Length: 112
Length: 105
Image 1 (cartoon, rainbow over the protein chains, first blue to last red):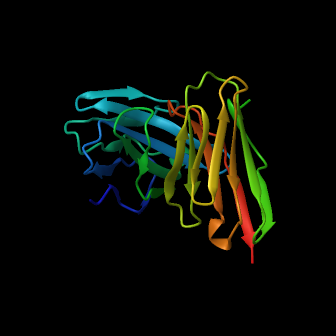
Image 2 (image 1 turned 60 degrees about the vertical axis):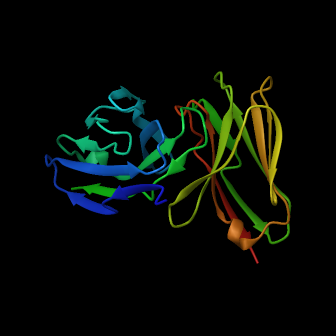
Image 3 (image 1 turned 45 degrees about the vertical axis):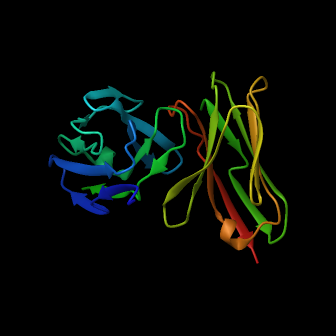
């Protein structure tokens, strides 16, 4: 099993550009989530999904969209990048909410 | 005020020392995760516990739900234990800011 994969590993965007961060898991997990990690702030939940077709907002959802058309994939879309979205983004999955989480390797995003 | 507080924020230990990292929370959490973030950035789950104690190798985690407190202990610490340790509520909305541990040979 590959576990949780994320692409790209690094990305530089200009303000106003849009992009999609990809996340996939091959463990048949129902629960998937996106976090951002900023210095001194800890991990913060952006969006999560409890199963295909079901998504919901976390603590910091503004500026981000998600969809969950399959169990395996949970892409995160930045609609119009802003410097405040410079961060490291982690995708995670678990069998169900609250169980052990498996994290992807992260995407380091810089918005100039 | 963060709903999940960890202490200490930074910790330096000599190899072989016994280490304790504390986590206190002010929200209703039915279970708590301990995560380890390696210097390269990868995050792995160490424990999920809702009561009592769990042990995995040299790592021991305890939790007291009534007192809203959990501890992570590392026995016979080793330089490879150097990492950031993060506690988080099982509902995944609440994370501590992490404890950065450095173990010196």
